[in-house]
Image (tube, rainbow, N blue to C red):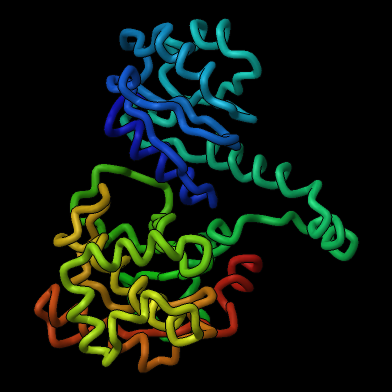
Length: 325
């Protein structure tokens, strides 16, 4: 990926398709980047607008030879199309994600990634059994959640702008109204986007979650506020799981606030009206556990006494709504 816009566009589309980004490479720094290890499901090459000078050269080809990937797709400028098509086997060619009017073209890449997910899971034994009882297409959970967002008002007493926090075993996701973006330079077709924190899962990412918590200057004060000893980090218990879920809520709010500066996306949490909590966390934390963390964040970080309305989706109504919509 060659530039700030292409990088943000491609990342935005991938996240909203239910895809998690493992690694991002800025082309100007490719000589100093170590290729990612393991098998990569899909490589997305993006960059530049049409009818400008070429962006890529043999450095890209040599880099890709060191990457073990199953699929590769090009959604960049048309000038480099022939160069890449003749040098990269099995390259899938899609329209540039940046239009002539400098807006994002989401559909071709989004559909490609969603269908790729479908092909990936269709051969798995558990999925084969599901297809014995349904003819419906099976989508990634984040895609379904994002599709439900415009209709949340039909099942919850919710006000815009809102934030959906989905805390699971491997990652923590947030789905947010794009009205919350502090510095919006992406024009998308949807009013809602997704951001993934792949190191904030409670089970598979436990160690990185604890590392992030210990590295945050406010976490120990939060633990004291919750009446919890920091020794909880060394425990493997239901109480430790509960605490880690509370810390995940705090950290994800912190990371997207103007104080966090951890990601490209900064959200105007001071104007947030509603927070919806879903995923595995909804089965572990009660409403008071969640409210205490949100109140601490708003008081300590944003210096606000009033917090957004908190809604907990314990029955996975968002998933059902996403399939219906």
